[in-house]
Length: 212
Image 1 (tube, one colour):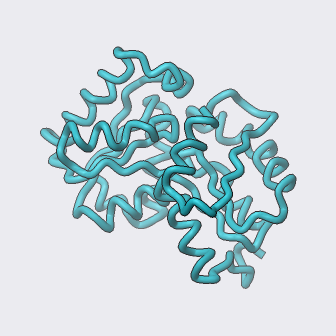
Image 2: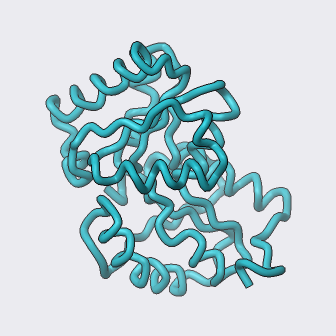
């Protein structure tokens, strides 16, 4: 899955931007709920510490796992793919729905939307109940479950944009947007694009209080 995310990231940035795609050597094989979120953070922080000279960091977990902790380690911009996707969707549509993996992930994503002040813009967070690692295969049955939830989000929620609620879905953005005729937002592409923009604008993580 890391290689899939890397390919999407490289396609979204300027050709001269270097992408270092890496994953934690410790922690759970995937992040699906509160327990996985808690146990993966030490490995994430260790991986960040191994790359002290990068200009920006993107945490490619839609739960935005450990983003605040990583911001405490660096002055470089740190962007979670969930937050990036929500803000992008809010800038291009009045209301959107999120299509994610497992039902047990819903409370965490809904809490993040409230924290970011975007819960009123999100009509609904929908679960496909497809395990994260199943997205690596992307067999016809898995794709059909995602497509079915996108269809329901448009017809029932009346969502005007769709946010893909897992980095493992990132390569479906163009395909689903063409099929359903609405913007489909991928957090990986948005996050690396925002990262480039923040670096270009010479903006860094604030150290005045919270992330000091």
